[in-house]
Length: 62
Image (tube, rainbow, N blue to C red; front, side):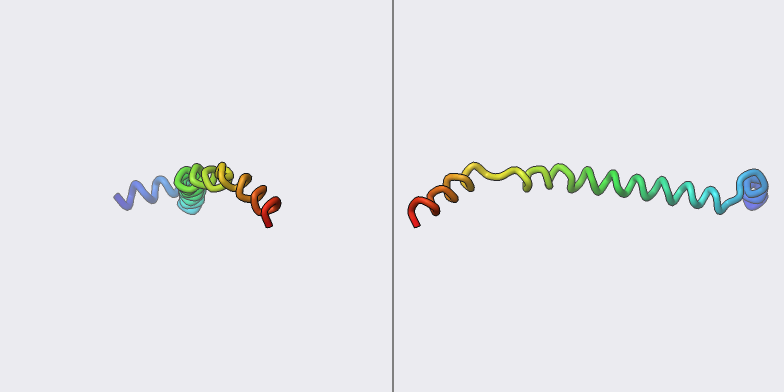
């Protein structure tokens, strides 16, 4: 196993493989976090239907 790793290291240095793996892990992490929290944020951003009437009521009846 170590001989195969050394042969692979001659063709592609191991630090380059490590950089590629870390970059792919970072991209995957961003995609997972966006999937986990992105859709939930769109629900929070949408204003509920009761906000506008309550705001108008506070203006007219204060």
